[in-house]
Length: 407
Image (cartoon, rainbow, N blue to C red; front, side, top):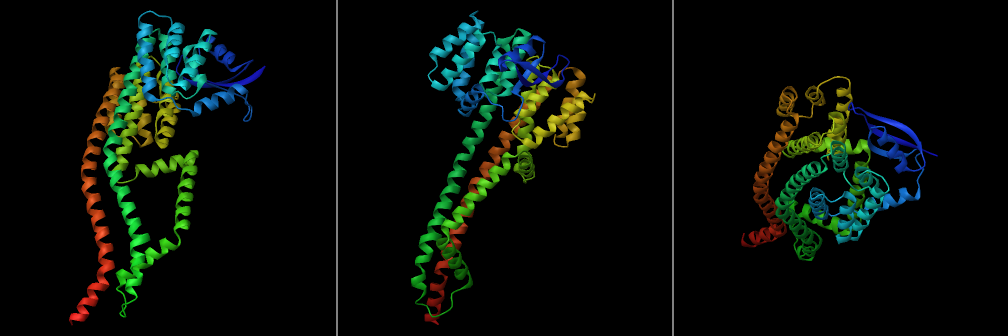
């Protein structure tokens, strides 16, 4: 017998942990499910206790499933189940038709686990690589008997999130290209063009202007120490990334991002929208508030907000309202708090959360459009001023020499 630590949700909406003894992880999951718990995760007790199955799951989780393939799978799965086809048969058909070999193998494994008696949500959870929002939605669909409706709601949720990301990425393409071109052009001038003027300047007996001296010093410093500068930059990026992966580092960096002028409020509103939409999706699927909040906290990209929402779960367990608990974090806007209060009072919390997400999605989209429209000319003007300043510094000694000859 092995010992497993199970993170569970109760019918009353509490999140608890229990230790159970079972031969396999699947058996531990089934044992907890039979006791009417929501099973969020099951891990073997002991930090270094890994089985070959665990290693296989870790390897599979590293390979990401394409979002388009995942969306198509869910839409086809909805159609098959709605048509009355058994889940097991539907999984088999979709696995055979899947073109991506990794996703095909994952679906085959899920089908085998469902055939052996594992629930659909547990089978997806055991494979790794799927969001907790999705597996929790499947769990809610199985418990409520409305699997098709829950999956359809999740697909709509995913489409909205992807559409927002697609708009942001497409809006940033041109500014990013401008920045990269500016960096390349300035690098060529500093590393190649300006140092070559040194031989030309040696013919001048007069002292070079201060601006020219500074530009020459910068150019020679980078040319002579390019590998050290590049190495230091790479090490700095790696160091920040490693620090960001730690729990404290991730929270610190995300807090700093939210304090950036103009961009900080946008990040805050996007994170609030992400949390509200996830919570609305889970509540609409029939998952209790506490469990929905616990899953929503893990789904938020901003780790500071994620940590604070996790603390909200404890406050609600102690009897505090959702609106008051969110207000205590100091990270949610007044509009969000007021609309959540109205939702709790009127019994339309799911609808209000969806309205909050829609409002902030539209606001973020509009703000980004305005910022991008202002950023493009600002980049062009800045790039022009920098290059003009560098050219002026290079030709200033020549102008002074001409003036001296004329005098």
